[in-house]
Image 1 (cartoon, rainbow, N blue to C red):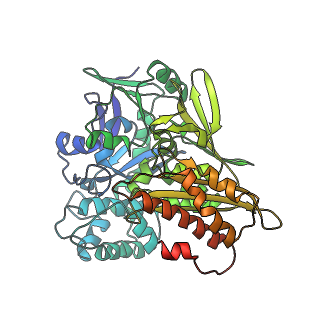
Image 2: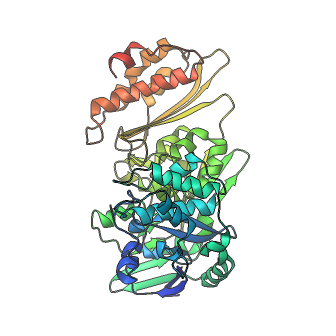
Image 3: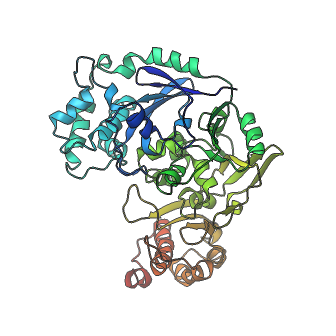
Length: 489
């Protein structure tokens, strides 16, 4: 068993054993290595000032992704290549083309957010040959600027896309073969345990190792993307010990397209899953585009969003409406259950001691099915939902409701189906009259709370109006909004 992690930092290979399970990459860079180009702005993965690139071996290739260093733990970085803004310029001081474009188009004023913007644009530059404006805006969703405004930054990105410079200017393309060889040399099929005082950081080498370790350590915190757990540390100052990091386990990062549906390993990130989800479930992919910024989507996992059990997690309502099935794994074997049954009460899930989420199955829909997901939040991008609603409808040949699944997040202590509303609609004609009559059934399903995101009254009315919206979008008729959504909105 090894007692140290290894990674490449810019051009240096690092072996590290003196760290705790909740030590962040940001603190290591700034305090430990004096790489102060990476800034701390929010310490919650929201502003992007701490953006760096992390390269990892995935499916035999080297993939670089922008991540938030402020909520990324050191224990998750074994076998990766960490790239900071200091690595971009040439040794003689010549700026990288991405940096030079920011200068040429006046994309910086105070400069605090600039390194993060540069690293996000650099990640886009590496991954996309000819990004359009929508690609640029998506890449910058997770970066906030308070003084420059975004147009000069977007213009800088467009300039780079239009006149792509030679790879000779870029250290990651020039040295890719060498970096890959060094990363392969680091990777070993051996579990790592780093001990500092009473703290323990555990990195299983295989899925079987994880199963055995978690059976022996059922109170350990399993961390994949840390997009939520990171805030437990940076905002709530919680001590987590021991911590088991699983983002290196390839067996949890598989995407399998079968005859009946798609199976996603619990460690698959939103970014990894996006292309497949967009092909088979476009409304779900549009929801993915609004989950945090690019950095969060590169770190956050679908399995983690489910396992966390938050009542305002965005993916569970959408997946429940699709009839998804969850597989839990333990040393006693595997157990499958409908995703909706996993959530028992606020903060309580149907997960036995030593069990963890292994994979998720999403069944394909019939050609007749109509599926939609709606996210309501104070701002469109990078915001937590006030509520999230998902609808999945199948009509019979006569236009009556043959099957319907409706799920909401943010309306109760758990993501939950609207059972009374479904019953009120099942077997009825899909019509404006039916919808108007069924809206009040939601009052039997939910009694939402008031908090700083929304009042209970707003949530309840909006949920009803989303039902009306779904009807209008699926009825195939141009109809005026009914009096409820006009007078009560």
